[in-house]
Image (cartoon, rainbow, N blue to C red; front, side, top):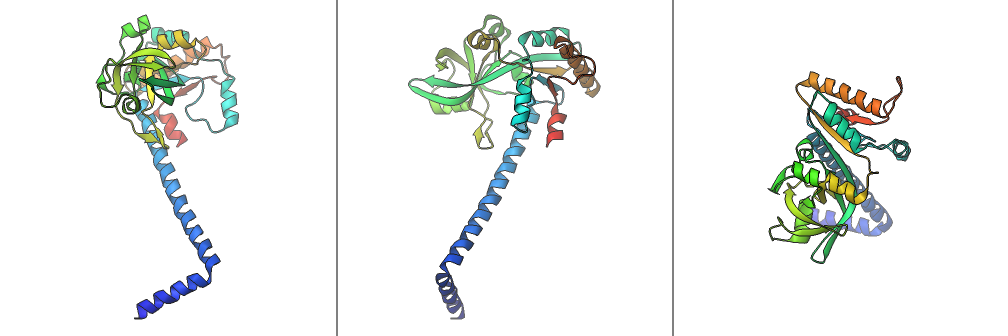
Length: 274
């Protein structure tokens, strides 16, 4: 009986102080929501960094126009003033870096994909050299990756992420199907392994085409990211970084003493940021 009386008194108190009850309830809800949001953001950040670290193997570094993580609009506009990195820069690194065992290049933009009357939006389109799948740690779940012939001939072969399969193709075998990327037909030759979400955004909403095909279609004014794998241990990694830095600085006519007008990033770069 005492417990029942206590419950009644509590309910009467709540009913008699409606405004205070509502405000208290709002405060509790906001507090719980804030905790959930922070935990979600932390988990998303951890997944993002894990993805970045996995794509930057211990022996892989990148050269790009701007860093992967930009801390504000002022930094963004500063980096946009830099000259773009071109395929000729990639070819110079590929042909001249004696400390590199493998070199690749990548470009990307947002596009739409259509199949059989259905379509996606906000899909990331990658233009890749055939070496990039290994350098970027992209696993192929079905089919095959690109070959040197895809690069050389600019084929209309495409590798897709699982969002394209799930949302457009359904249960049928995707290999050999023809999809349209920004209205242009491509034949699916491979499907990438599932990557999940980061910051609530799917990491599987993408398609990849040979980089030569990308440039034939969209032109040559998108900046290229260069990936390079060092041929050896940590000491070889440092030598490869130095060799590529000197090469790119010379090609971009950076004067002695001037800072780099490009970004060289490794696993350590992301560890320092976070």
